[in-house]
Each structure stands twice: as structure tokens, then as C-alpha cells.
Image (cartoon, rainbow, N blue to C red):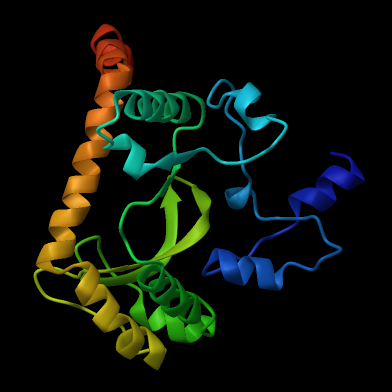
Length: 221
């Protein structure tokens, strides 16, 4: 074993509690990183043409056009929806009826939580996926995704963390409003219309047909 290889083999990594902690602890001049956080590129998982688009903007779907009574507007919105799903796998929805103030209040309260010291956030670490409050870093196998999460149950009973104060007192009314009966019906309507639009693009049929044809390869390995 060469000296360099031996040196690399002797390197040990401390698994950080979160991605935010990893970013804070990693020196700006040091390119070494724990292998469990290394991003492995998977070929053919994305559309290279979409990513290399000159404008570099994410696909945007106008919900008001998706439910428009104007056939031409709705047809174009469905085409845009299909293109976004096929090329990107996600999209940004606008004109959906959720107030901007409500969205910002929830985002600001969440940001305050993730800015807390690591030891305070770990007080809310859950033991299982059914815990009403659960903080942690999402992992699949031996590889950690580059994101931390905070999950709270909102229905049928509202659960909230007590730190920072702004999360509970600033967000509770917003979250309760967002998850109230009227808003739940509104969100279900939005989801239904989007699903209807995706179905009309034919992509769902294509996906189901692909799964049917490749069932053994996908599920029986």
C-alpha cells in the first residue's frame, strides 16, 4: 500500500448529526467529506437537455390556467405540465389560491427552528415515523441525503415544538388555518386537478404500462 493510500485509509470521519452541522464543521479549504454524504450520479435519471437549458429556470405551472374554461389555455397548461413531469420530475405551482403571507409565515418559522443549536434540535429527534414530532436527517441505506427534516402531525390533533417560540405561536394559527376544513378541501381540489392534468398528458398510462412490462425486474430482484 502506498503512503498516500495508507494515509487515506487511516482517515476517520465523525458522522454529523445533520447536514447543517456538516456544512458548519467542514472547513472551507478542506475538500474531504464523509463518503456517506457523497452524491453518486445516476446516469439517465435526468433529462440533460432540460438541465442545460439556457434560461436555467425551473418549470412553472399556472394553476388558474390548468382549471381554465378556455380550451386553448387549458390545453397549453396540460402540455406544460406533461413537459415538466417528463423533463424535470417536478414543477413550481403558481396562482393556487394559498396566500403568500401564510406561506412566508410557515417558512420563516421553520427557518428559525433549523437555525437553533444542534443540541436543541436533537431534543425533538423521533424514534419512529409515527412519532407526532420528528426531527432528523433523511437516510437511505448507508447514504444520507443532503437535507434535514422536521415532521409534525397537524391532523386530527395539532402537534408543535416549543422551540423557537415563534414556531409555535407564530405558526400555529397559520398551520391551523392551512389545515382547517376549508383549506384541506382546497388542497384536495388542487391535488385532484393536478392529477387530472397529469392523467390527460398520458404520462400516468405510460408509467403504469412500464411497470407492468417490467414488473419482475423492478419488484422481484
